[in-house]
Image 1 (tube, rainbow, N blue to C red):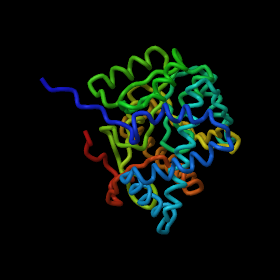
Image 2: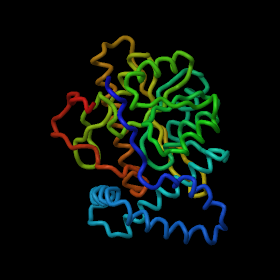
Image 3: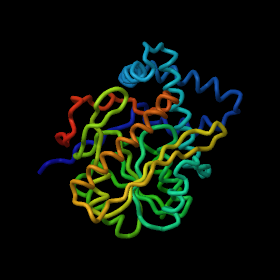
Amino acid sequence: MNERPLLPRNPGPDWGFRFLQQVQRVPRWFLQPLLAVGTWVAVGLMPAQRRHSRAYLVRVLGRRPGLADVWRHFQAYLEFLLLRLRVAGGAPVMCALEPENAGVFEALMASGEPALFGTFHFGHSDLLGFALAQRGRRVAMVRLRVTNSEDTAMLEQQFRGAVSFIWVNEPENLLFAMKSALERGDSLALQCDRLHSSRTEGFDFLGARRRFPFTIYHLALMFELPVIFCLGLPDGRGGTRIDVSPLFRPDPNLGRDSNLQRGRDHFQAVLARLETRVRQHPMLWFNFLPLNAELPEDATKPVASIG
């Protein structure tokens, strides 16, 4: 009998989340210098993440980044982690919609129709599911289960009944769990940048043809549901501005291939929108991993599964 593989873990010590919870209780005048020092410690103790940060910043900044640039990248992520912990502790998710496509988003929310909400590891986007829950949506968030993610457990407890999690590293249950969530009227929230999916295709992003998961559009066709992407950007006052994409809806009068091509066009436009935001706010790209693998420029067909 094959044993279940060990779960991956977040970088950093097992006590990291508990420490961040406690450190927020210190006076603000002392917290900022403390976090600055802590960020330097993280930069020093996480060589792999530091290397991937540098490689990404070279691409997005168009120059060789200094150590201070890497520190700012780490610091931005630390500030987001603190926000996640505040939300997990009961703080509301304060969101406002960007005007463009806001009407489409509001109409979808008012309809009560289950939908596929796509997002990326960028800015405050990881709070999308909890923001939707505050708007009366039940959301199943498709995520990678890791061993040392106490914030996820806290968030699930905080939003109990409105937010649940489906784990991509339990592939034997994945499709059944998504189908069950949709049948009970939940929406799905999927992050569409990291390559956990077996359905990937090539798209233009940050100056190259890169591999991205395309599963969300196959799900849209399978369950006849709309797809909409949301990006969360800090508003500078502790809240979040939500940038919404146009809506993709499968056309029942078209065949599968035509609908998938429409999905490709939609996702490429979403990635162009994301790239604009990434170049405006380069420190908010929270993937301390290698950039999505480059493909030949003419790679338009689905590429091989990564497992």
